[in-house]
Length: 452
Image 1 (cartoon, helix red, strand yellow):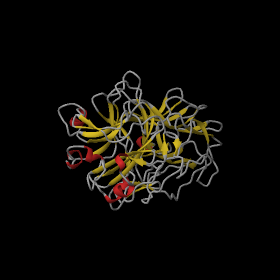
Image 2 (cartoon, one colour):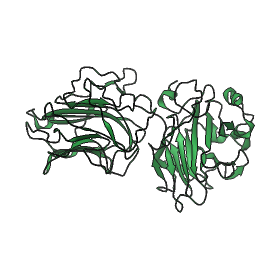
Image 3 (cartoon, one colour):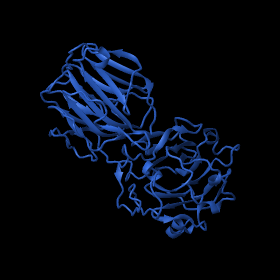
Image 4 (tube, helix red, strand yellow):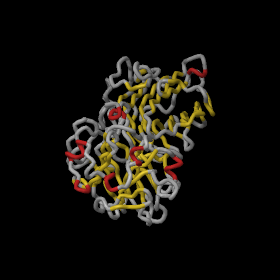
């Protein structure tokens, strides 16, 4: 959550000339300055943050910038996990070697701003009695990080490159997490936080546990080794900026006067496979369905020019909308109803249901067998919406005409917003946690699901 910070009071540092910070981050925002790691206040501030235009900014400030880096590259992908490593060793003779930044195992070398620390400079922020913070820096409470953080390492007095914390996958060539880290010395103030759990425990050889300095820690199945679909703030229709995304881009809300026709897609699209997700209705009458990946087609969705852009079910009456028309399909929904969605791209079929019962008299057996008798497409005059061969994405919209809509999507994280599912259903794939039983051979829309 955007207000959550993990904090600890620093003890006597091992060596104020050297440190390493390594962490995996998944952003949920763009266009806003957000801080994710640092310390202060006596002796200055050490602050790592994303600028409002997407660059990484890293600095130590004590009566002026003692060192500072601002990347030229911008980081705007809200579906990716970034592995960030910051290495400081002011004892080195070459100025550019004293402060290094790595992203996904590769050192950043192009900067808009670069101020190197002087040789043997001591980092004043790493001082006994100061606050170290993950999710912001020091005691600062403004512009806290909005997204997910995992496997945070801090080594006090030692400088490491990324190789203890990540490695290149021999099959894919991608940079991946090392969940078992060896060969790292943490020093007096060092720690290893958020290792596969939200427990406030230090998994290093120290006992530097932390406290929640603000907000609420929420567990998520989304992790560096399995990226789950979320709502994509970058892939929107022509009614842009009329919605607010929170809770790791799984909650979508619109205001009472400006939300009409605001639509967003999910971050993962598919052309094959069998997929399941759930939506809990917050307020208003959300519209839930599917749309194509073509941005030109999507921006005209529900216009008259592109009748095959997608289809959806309207919470106001449960009708399916397609080709500029609508047909009776299910029933309306209201606050706290949970909508189930099953998308079978192998057989080009789709189903929606509510609170454990599928619409249009469909059964779990029908869905598992890929039988079209009562699926959503039987209510439409054509199946072209799923047969085109294009990628199909989850779609969420406020089509009430009045705005003031809210919904919480569970793509498998086991939460609707910050509320855990009340009684998890069965899921044979073992990927994701859902309120209701997942049909056999269906799974969560995630990278591990894509590779089953």
